[in-house]
Image (cartoon, rainbow, N blue to C red):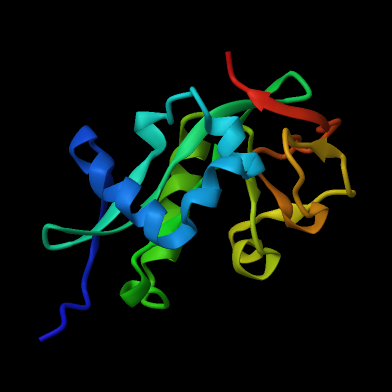
Length: 166
């Protein structure tokens, strides 16, 4: 019998090993060289803005938000969003996205950056800016550099280098 229900919960330290296993399955060892991974390196994700999806006790998905700066302005980096392969297409990723975005907005953040596919992330409010309006610490397809404004003026003057938060 397959359980089709899941719950989105705040991430806890006990989830770390399961999340890392999902990252390895989904992205492999090359994930550490990606631009977004370089932005996260050495910076702790925000524990108030990182969530997991569980079916019973089984970890089936995760999303994390990590503080960064874009052109000197505070921002959040979303990712990785990861869902166990046999749970893809069943709503866990979308639920994790909605939860993380709502929590970031409620916490007073103004913008979220990610590197991903516009057809998937666009319905959540992510938009593409002009190519290279935001530069990343490693090569990334400019069509996949997306931002989600959380306030009316979030995109005004937004641009420059995306860097790790201090």
